[in-house]
Length: 575
Image (cartoon, rainbow, N blue to C red):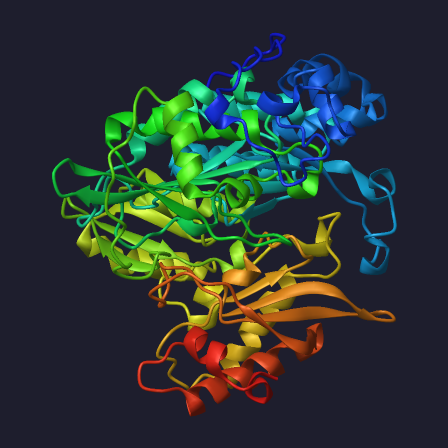
């Protein structure tokens, strides 16, 4: 993707719908804002601001005007709207507690600083890129850095005056923030062991790179109904949470056509969770990019734009069904039909890749766990130094807030593990340190009700102490989220915690139990269950997790996972 400071025109109008594709939306009495059915008249303010000016054009205004004139020069539609297409959100103003989250407008909640999301498609970084991010963090973001569960790196405390300089530094090493947020094609999740794993089915790297170079920042795809999330893997561990993305291409071997991808569409969590569906279509590698673009355009042209709460692709798929979606995709957007193909085999192992793995070239990769993705500019700089000292120039981020070091000689593995552990990155973490993730939380996020990162980190420390002598047959995934939007995937965790106001001035978490994806110890993906009235205060979190863990160990059947037990257990056992 080549960054540009030129003005971006609005996309051409999509071609007319065929009679076969004309369908009514979920409410036939009024327009749902589907471009190819209802026309392109904007039906809410978000659609109005996108129609008035392509959000990609805001880059030039940031460089030429806002960075020079300062924060007060930024109009609201750019600040709270189009800035997202450049990877920028205003962060939460410090000192505003969770009781006011849903009561205040964006301006009242917003600080004069930004979260900046650095886009890392496929999670692939060189040590030069890692060191550049570290320098940007230390020079412009008060040393902050988090690894997200979308394989991005997020910085905080970024001032508008510094954004052009940050972009210059990032782009000099091949990084950017374009479309890291917004109603567009966000970062593409990719297998962290793409191209190196000894048991890889197919290497998705060429597909990810072609999409990134050709279509990220493309004005034809920059105005979607809502965000669009992608995942591509060729690894048998199913390591990109493919069931909860708008599109996923999952490596399979066709009995006649050889390696390629199985196509999934329509996944997403938040307040209306829905797992993606297989379309039953086999995508040959040479048609993967075409298919990805086709699904994006189906969403662009037929997605619901009237209500943002109903604007994700999952709602269109729920209305159409998989068969109709595939038919419209093939007849209107692809060069021809796709062959039928097989489903992915069950996952062969954990998808987080923590620990030591063999590469196909005889070298090793080492996966380490930061605590709930929280790192820092200083830590990233140290990682770059340590990695290079052991002969490597490549690292990868994972969809599980982890970091992999590639290309390590066997004799260097143990020294590398020791040096990374000294800075808080563990290749042999405790089960809870390995399997716990957390969103940004109230520390910086305007949507959050509760603190997450430190609460989760404290809980991990306490659980390690309390359960030090207890052997868990499987790690228990503990996912901590600051609000209902499920950035930390609470519905697909063994124990998912949704931050909320419990009553009065007390904050805590609603509990979801027994979720999981196919890449975990479950045979099939499934959403967690809620227990009536079960809520846990933040200071009671270690007590609750210890209690429910011990009950699982006491009541479980032979080889029964936590998720399976949680779905069959009596409610009293889950309290």
